[in-house]
Image (cartoon, rainbow, N blue to C red; front, top):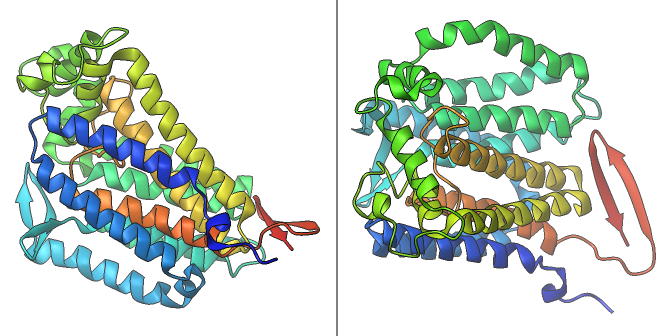
Length: 371
C-alpha cells in the first residue's frame, strides 16, 4: 500500500517552527513593535512554506542559474535604488513593504551551492574554487551594504556545505588559513561603527553611554531575568526601551528578561530540536541535492542562532543579525519559512521504508534510499 501524503510529512518540523513563531510574536508584542505587521509577515511566511512544500524541489537545479542571476540583480538594485536605515543601505521598497535581498540571498546561496555540488562525484580543487567563485560576489555585495552579520552567515553556509559535499581537510584548511591572513585587514574593510563594535566587544565598559551601550543593556536585561524571569510584559529593560533594537537584533535579551534562564533553555531546546529535524531530513534524503539543501538550511539557521544569542550575552561581537522565526522582520521570517518548506518538500517526496533499506554514501552525507 502506497504511503499517504500525511505519512510522508515531517510533523515535528512545522510544530517546532510554529512554537518558535508564537514565542516570537509574544516577545515582539511585549517590545512594543508593530506586532500586527509581524502577524501579516508570519501569514505570508506560512503561505511561502505551503507553496515550497507543494513545489517539487527536484526542479530547482535547473532553475539555479536564474535564481543566482536574480539574486545578484536584487543585490545590485540595493546599491543603486535601495534606501538606508541605521547607517546601512539594505532595503528595497516593494508594494510599500521593505524587502531585504540579503535575507533572500542566504537561501538562494544554499540552493545554488546544492545544485552545483550535487553534480560532482568528488570535490577537486577546481570544483572547490568554483564554489568559492559562486559565493564571493554575493558576499562582497552584502558586505558593502554594509551587512557583516549576513556575510558571516553566507560564509558559514559555504564552509558547511563544502564539508557536507566531501571537501578535503586541505581544502577546508586553506579557508582557515585565508581567514587568518585576512583577519588583520578586517578593521580596514569595515565601516567606522563596525570597527567600534569590535573594540567594544573586547572592552564594553570603555564607552558605556556610547558604542558599548547596546551590549551593556542587553547583558543587564539577560541578567535581570534570573532563573524564572520577570514574567511576560513585565521586563523593565525591554518595556521601558533601555534595550536598543529590542524587537530585532536584541530580541533574545528581551525574551530572557521576561522568561529567565529556564525560558531561555526552553527556547534553545526548541531551536535544537528543529535543527535535529533538519539533520534527520538530510540523513533520509532520497538524493544528493535534497541532502545538501537540508544540510545548507541547517547551517543557515544554526549560524544565525549562534551569532544572535552569542552577541546578546556578550560572547560574540555585535553583528546585527535577527533570530530566525523570532525577530521582527518580514524578509527574514518569510525566507526562513520558505527554506523549511523546501526541506518539507524533500521529505514529502522521499520513498518510505516498505521492505528493505539500502544506504549509499556521497561525500560526508549519508543518502538513504528506501524502497
